[in-house]
Length: 325
Length: 272
Ligand SMILES: Cc1cc2nc3c(=O)[nH]c(=O)nc-3n(C[C@H](O)[C@H](O)[C@H](O)COP(=O)(O)OP(=O)(O)OC[C@H]3O[C@@H](n4cnc5c(N)ncnc54)[C@H](O)[C@@H]3O)c2cc1C
Ligand SMILES: Nc1ncnc2c1ncn2[C@@H]1O[C@H](COP(=O)(O)O)[C@@H](O)[C@H]1O
Image (cartoon, rainbow over all chains, first blue to last red; front, top):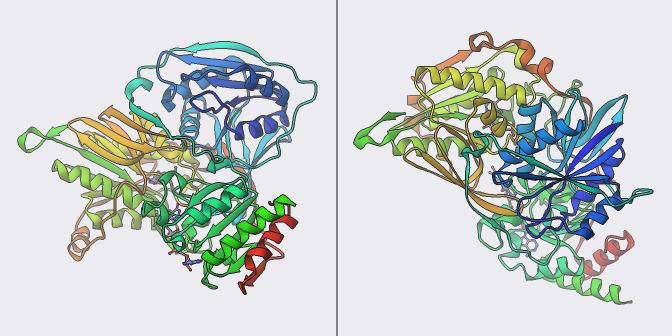
């Protein structure tokens, strides 16, 4: 039985980020109470989201406020540390964003916690927490036990199926106010701009991702049309983002976003090792590339050797037709 | 901080560089769950070339100096040598069998102690690291190191600049971009967007031969073996296996109907 705290990542307007539901599902499996942590960073939790968290098994939400900006990871880490202390929870779960990894690193120093990042599962085994994760660009599966009394685990999106809890109610909300240390205030947040909503699913947690590479020669229209018929997100290689064909936030790979959707489709993508590092753990991998020797075919479940300008319009049209019947 | 020409503060920078298995090679984990690091095809973590470039550029602007620092086995000295060839002034290699198996916190403890020691000669104004090690990709080290050194952390800089004794970075996060600022001393991690790393030229390679490389052990740093390595780690790999190859793979040549075939495959597998 391990009580857990789940960091409730949310948008600037207070909408829960999709992977938070997976975190709650995983936390429930640990057998203890599941508490949510809401950072009051300007956005507030609406009643609908609170009820949804209750249905998933969250019994209490801690609304954390600070006398400094909670967007600063050092401030958020101190707030979470004091909450871990106050609740006696044995594990903090968070999504695998860059900011949360900063929080995790600070918590390791502040609390002595053992940290696992980019996990895709977490269970209790012989009284220990054991996280699973893939490493080396998705080519190895590992399981990692936390040997410290406190665990901080960041989880990748699309790791588990979300399921509702039995006998759930609406969580109570309790306030937790903290005073940030002088050390945490030394970084000044001069400017923060939230990325505008693309209208498509969030790349990091989408169930379907269509990625375009150099082969698109800069025109992402066909890639976007395919993504839209599949309800997916649009991603890209670094070549495409460096060329300015699409924003840097679309870059998938070792130095970009890590994706593990149910379906990844690479279009005019060669499958360089740096790119593979960010998508190789995807469920089904499809590749469309005119070069039969492209490395992406080594990992594709379904590969098409062909010109994307011929294959994509036909594919999109056929999918539209099949959806109508 | 010392002052150079025209009273411009001269920065002294420590840049942390890591020796990692080449990502183009077949990387493996041993029975103990640790990265096999003796394959001989290790290399300087590519992303640390960006860290070196950032450190050198910032130091050159003020006539400052750069110390390249690595923690790792014998081969790891190659990582700091590459740093010297690119233009770093001196190098420190922390080498001790007890360090093997360290987690991010263990490594951060060693680096922090080494930076404190380097700072005893002359104050360190800035620590620069890469955004991630391409072996573990945890990105935990920079923030943990800043916390131990008790200096502000400005991670993931896509742009970094120094204005007197203030460091400023622009960074792109998962859902937002930010500008952060802090007074020196501070720690910055830089991404591969930050710059285009220089190649060592012939002159740089020759000059590097004469530059000092100091090797330190844990006891030189006043650290106990129990603080680091497997002994100090808070996580333990209990299982590691190469992922089985994907089965039932299909590869077709487009004969004019590949789009239709692919659509059928997606629908059949409930992916569309
Ligand atoms: C430190 C470092 C970090 C990096 N990080 C990343 C990262 O995070 N993500 C990333 O993606 N890259 C990263 N890279 C870059 C990476 O090494 C590759 O250069 C990049 O992924 C290649 O992009 P690409 O597949 O679009 O281009 P290319 O490798 O040029 O491939 C284009 C492909 O399109 C195919 N093609 C061309 N025309 C057509 C057509 N009409 N129809 C179908 N196919 C066509 C070609 O056959 C080719 O295979 C990094 C590099 C470094 C050094
Ligand atoms: N053993 C090491 N020696 C020197 N620098 C390191 C070491 N490990 C990590 N670093 C630095 O920390 C950065 C992030 O590494 P990591 O947190 O392991 O992904 C790297 O880019 C290096 O700059």
